[in-house]
Length: 173
Ligand code: CO
Image (cartoon, rainbow, N blue to C red; front, side, top):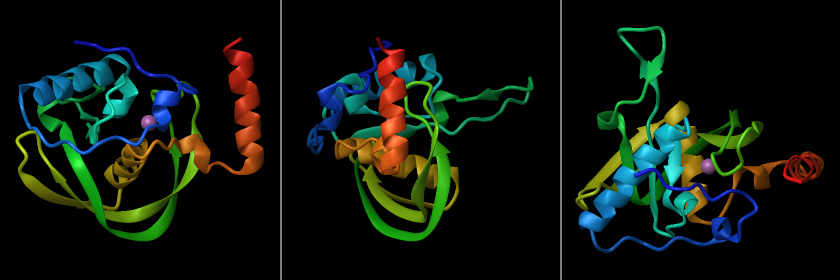
């Protein structure tokens, strides 16, 4: 089921999400709804707080080239489901232009670590470790910030943030 996305400056986006302790049917349907919602909104990642559920859960699905067309696709089986993620290594610095389904149509350069190593649990509670130094690395950092109530626009310089707030207000009048 496609759920409504929580849009900035909704205060729910500032919540610190809670650790998942039960890996049941309810968690699985939350994850399935998150995938449907992310696809419906053309996203590549989504944290559960973005649909109003304050749990340490996010998903990422990096688009891949479709073999039958010149478009990209995001098959469900490619979805990475992160439950209770913990960053165990961060290295190097990079800049990446990011966007967020909770701040639609805004794209800004953000400073990030280049390499990250993350431990997490899957929907059955099984532990995994993943590392990356490309797009997935950036996506994991962006989504993990949501679990701590942080948005990418908070990483902008003072002037850029001011400009954003002014334009955001104007647009949402
Ligand atoms: Co986001």
